[in-house]
Amino acid sequence: MPYLEEYYDIVVVGAGHAGCEAALACARLGLETIVFTISVDSIALMPCNPNVGGSSKGHLVRELDALGGEMGKNIDKTFIQSKMLNSSKGPAVHSLRAQADKQAYSRAMRRTLEETEHLTIRQAEVSEIIVEDQAIVGVKTFSGAVYHAKAVVLATGTYLRARCIFGDVSNETGPNGLQSAKHLTESLIANGIEMFRFKTGTPARVDGRTIDFSKMTEQFGDEPIVPFSFSTNPESIQKPQVSCWLTYTNEQTHQIIRDNLDRSPLFSGAIEGTGPRYCPSIEDKVVKFPDKERHQVFVEPEGLYTHEMYLGGMSSSLPEDVQHAMYHTVPGLEHVAIVRNAYAIEYDCINSLQLRPSLEFKKIHGLFSGGQFNGSSGYEEAAVQGFMAGVNAAMQVLGRKPYVLDRSQAYIGVLIDDLVTKENHEPYRMMTSRAEYRLLLRQDNADLRLSAIGHEIGLVPDAMYEKVVKKQEAIDAELDRVKKTVVGVTPCVQEFLRSHGSTELKTGMPLVELMRRPELGYFLTAEIDPDRPQLSRDTAEQVDINIKYEGYLKRQQAQVEHFKKLESKKLSTNFDYSTVKSLRIEAVQKLNKYQPASIGQASRISGVSPADISVLLIHLEQHRRGRLSTGEDE
Image (cartoon, rainbow, N blue to C red; front, side, top):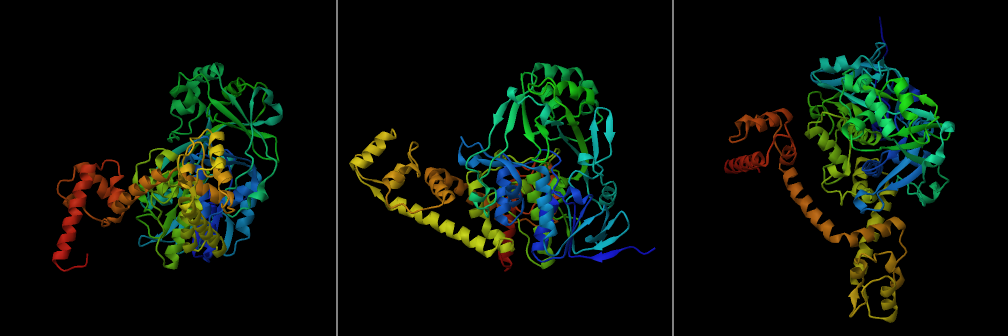
């Protein structure tokens, strides 16, 4: 019986946050791309909390935007509340977070995909990858249709053999009751891909009309609103915002949970998958933190189209009757009506150590992957991986070199390096503490760091890139000016210093030195700086940060230079490390298994010690000298 047979440059499997970014990147680079989804209505679905950003995640979204991705633009179109987190702390940990209108976000992203040239959307379940001579040649759907491709990006999210669980109820469905993908796992295993079983969860959704908000603390958005995308005009998004609310669990809540732990699939063994350490269920929190008297519960709207509210911080897989009892003990939720039960979801994902830093599988040429399929958690982590996987799939088809961001360039580089270098036995979540150079990798300077790369790839338009170039020139010129400007001992200056509790001058001083005083800064000193040029707010902020943190920035830049030296020392692929004398047995086993691309990457592999790295450096130097002695090029 004949089956449908079609030809594309690139196939993307999955249209969640990773799949959307991958498909858009490939199509925008001019490649004929098809993206498969279980349901067209679930494109860019937010099955858990409908928000974008948050601590460290906001960094990822702004980096994605600077490279030419879509998530930042889409949330700017569809947010209902926006807030800069950690604003009372230093700029390295400032992180933007926006609550989305869930349906509006999905509809807007779907429309973007539909209006993108070279991009086809197809509702079908991909059941097989087609591999010939260790290279991908296409995929097959459950109906038997074959789609030939030069590269394939897998972005299956939490759908592979998905199972939703609460109490003794277990449904073989994906998130939000959508169909699970039951067949692709077998094909992946048959092609030598190692699979893991992970778990995540989500809290109940409730009817906002049955909540007593008077018992909760109202949480307002920021004014003015800061956009996620560097291409969004800030004036265009200043609008009324919807409030979120904060309440807490209590001892009564915790006792109900403790009394029913034997009915929790999380503790009974009914759940096989490993859950996220940094986003635990409420029953996990109660067990692991028995001395904590209460836990935060964030009550957030699902969108403007509905009364449904999301109970952030109370994900659970407890039975329905227990959920009903425990939610009703929370202040403000005493009479709440549950719209959707909380549940845990198990799904198949890969051991990400099988991937190259380009997110291509080591064993199968042309097969790339991104998102929760790679063992990560979160919409933002998914989106940036999908983007990089899509870019590198496109680069391979176009005959160009892959793009790999390192740990000193971006949070994206930290995330992907951690996934392909370190053993992850639970869903990986990005955190600011994972980034060694976080003072350099701030969310506010993502455009300055990465727009040149996005422009080189071909996804940042000339006009946008030119705007970033001019911004950097303005920053450099202003830094040079304030260093050369001397403030004299005048009555006006002395009065200004007294009024701000700052020490008066005894002699003239460079303006930049006054700006470094903690009680002053770039913005306050405008009063005694009549020659100051008119700068945009974000440009002035860059000047202020560079002045205040100059010493720390220089120190971190020196650390980056050392890091770069280790990264530049490349290692051979398919090398037998047992031939290197003095390496410990564990190091030999790990190095042979993961085949790191550089000394730097080798140093981050669990089980490879600093002493092992010293041995490798000596080995490389001896090898280099041997090549020179035989007349080979270095």
